[in-house]
Image 1 (cartoon, one colour):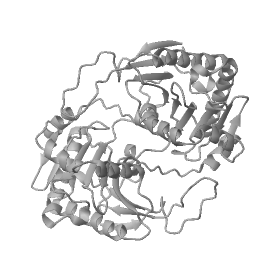
Image 2: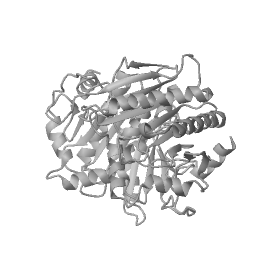
Image 3: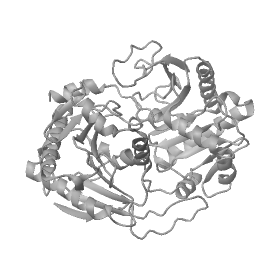
Image 4: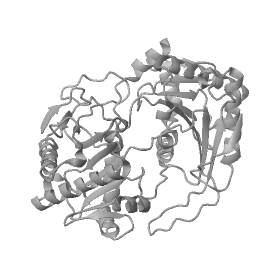
Length: 247
Length: 247
């Protein structure tokens, strides 16, 4: 497994300043590509337990490198699989973008968490583990179809214990996550015929409950979604969970 | 031109109630399809002035029908052109979805407008009309590449005067909008080779400055955008405006 600076970086350490009368920040940051596997045609759904643990270790290592930098306020780790999901390379890869700001979607989550009397994600884990939206679980992780699924067959993977990021995983959690993630990718491939997808790791330094979101890219984000922020999803999470459990 | 109830309606007048322990609203509302043109292969970029005025009249008529209903809080009018932009029919069409709620993106705009000492859209019109992001204008409308362009070659069309919705247009504004919109669609088709796009009309009953947003769908919304709300756009609005002006 190898990690490279992205050739077409969205963020660079020394950007040229924007010239404008409105407020714009320079694109200061870092943008890396993680080559997930040596084989050009390898599908992550086939990764061995050892391979998946290594990939998670790479995520963890690069996260821990960036999260402590003075000029970084958020570290986004994500994987686009398939052209329809935005992958411009067919060789399996992940990306890391370290940003100088807390991005708006994460900021809204943090605000909501601060305003809640308990951790909303702990609550989700507790309630959903026995709901019709539960898909799979092992010792330390659970996979669900979220109640507010934006896209058909969206799933979330959450740790049962309240950890903020990958660095806080112990060996057992690391091993269990690799196992559940392999299972999740295999089921999705089998059920939806190797669909394009986005896999996104949501985590911050502290005061958060990390989670991984997988969005199969089998529907389009069109005019209605773009202009309203409301998502039309024809598959209920209960239906999605039932189908994924059976895959 | 004909208007039909959508065969696969996202909202219906009498939905079955959701059964869940979390808060979910029934999908109460209305969903129509406007067949823009009698010809199956007609491209909106070729519509005559008379045809475009008729289409805008249809938008206005259907908006005025829905906006006053007691069970409607927002009327979304949009057009998806091309499969990549989410159009499931190739015959040129627009859609109207009448919602029982004010959608989140619109709600945030309204909150921002309420908090501002002046209308942000009036300010945009005034500043941008002579900026490097200006594209075209006529007596009552202006087209710009917005400072915060989410996607390459995104453009906005705004009325010079502060009107909240299509119903407040006078004859002159109606005629000028048809003219500018035709020009905008023709330029986009010529410059970007008939790209897929989403055209979205943002309007509410009062206290707003209506605007039309056109997003060419030539890039994908991928993992980074979905998880952060930050959009990577490799084409600056100044560059986009220059190219569109020259088309």
